[in-house]
Image (cartoon, rainbow, N blue to C red; front, side, top):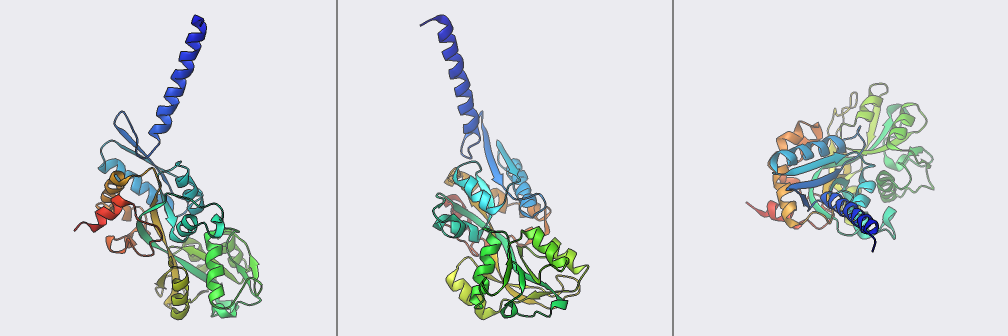
Length: 323
């Protein structure tokens, strides 16, 4: 072999080796010169997932020696489970219903099942809020036949929530004028009078609903207890919620509804040891998460199993089982 060929071969080998080190360093279980790398998927910068994920990253970087955790903005739950599955990220905030669909290959994950997902903890409820203007005269979900309803974007978790809840009332998309609008589009359409009801699945108080209520008197439509019980029997990821009176200006009624839970989910790159270390760091420093966003006040050690829709990461389970 010629000397020049040998040099080229060695150069290519060095490049490939360097690339291997770099990509290995992005794995949640890998060290590069003693550094642990952990990528955390969140959501859009205007939502709740992003500040919560950022606070988790800050806690991990401060509390775990050698940790380099990075929270990144993503397309939220559906994007996050796919990224967890392919190892692009290691941890993520995900709605528990989306995690359930992904792990079981249902809804938007038919024929696209995601393996290796493990729950770390349920964090806080994201409530299914059926919002209408008081001027519409609508007081019950059974009254939506023939009405214009913003049901969420096609293939979204919100859209699945709407379909499941309306079915429990004997209402299908054939009975309503379904508008497949995103979260922001649905809120704007309600404010502008282009739909009669907008459905928003989010932690309350939700900024977009506050914005609508500041301009128009609103009403939240209830999901009664017997309907909630039937839903939970069929879909175990739902939990009962009461939206407190006064949550939104001008509307002083407590409203029963159902919620899905925002969860912290680990991918296959997070082994038992790392899962334990991460969980211990987070739940020993919840005060720091609570300064990042008011919704974090609902994160407690007592509710980590609420609506849990995945098998637990062994390390997280070990931590929560400790006295």
